Amino acid sequence: DNMNSPRRSPRRNRSTNQQGGPLSHWRNLNHRWRRQYIDFGHCRIAKCTDRLQASNNNAEQLMELKTRGLSFVALAITAGATASGAMRSAKELDVIDYITTAASFGLNVNDDVHGESSVELASYHGMHRVLIQLLDLGCPLKKAGCRSNAVVAAVRNGQHTALDIILSKRRADASKVIKEAVSEYFSSGYYFSPLMLAIKKHDAASLQLLISYGLALMSDYDFVRTRKNIDRVLRDCYIGISNVSHWCRELHWSFPTTDRETLNWLRHAGLLPDEIWRRVFSYIGRGWFLQHNGISTLNPPLRSEVLQSNIIP
Image (cartoon, rainbow, N blue to C red; front, side, top):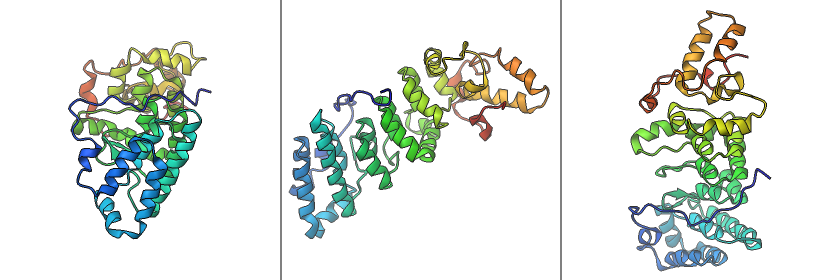
């Protein structure tokens, strides 16, 4: 099933200059909550749920978590992801119970570990029921202060079912975080594009999902970074199109923004009938109108919404 990919190791590569793990961040917490960190490290999720439930009558202990925006849900997801086989399903149910308890106490269930939010982690590890629960609780796809988002996390780990869940339940939010990636590049220096990831990984299933939800938006920067990979994955997605390097209505989205702006301008100038434009455009290769220093075009001008659709019906 191309919608379900193998789970990859939860042990992620960390930057060597990343400072402060969870224990250092929480060292000043009450000893009860420091025990949560230790027990989650040993995948004792049910025990952590019992401990959280036992604090129901201690407002001071709960307030300690609320003031720090903590619930340990991100740790619970990380712990559950270490399980495999039949145990994985059981641990995911334990995580769901923990989230239910944390939410009932008004805790922030979308906390984070190493800058990765609960929603991101559920998406990356393919914990589908947990992901649905978090989305239904109103958790955002991108948490403030975190670099990446849940859409990118799903594509990064080839979690196609998780990606489908996100796009079906939160299409508008997904569109927003994808569009904001370029502007955030200038402030953070990091660029997170699910489209670019899918193309570079030759992940046709993720690309087809992005296309089907209308979220495959090729920026100039995406094209500059994927120009050597895009034809190969497009041939897998569009078997009936013999030449995926040249323009056609179905592939309009795959042309970089500068190309689409130019083609749209030519089309809407009304100089030629649509049938003639179709023939002219079919000779145009992807990137023809893009400046050679494509990265300099990252500062985008105001663009019409028509760029997101095929320009000739």
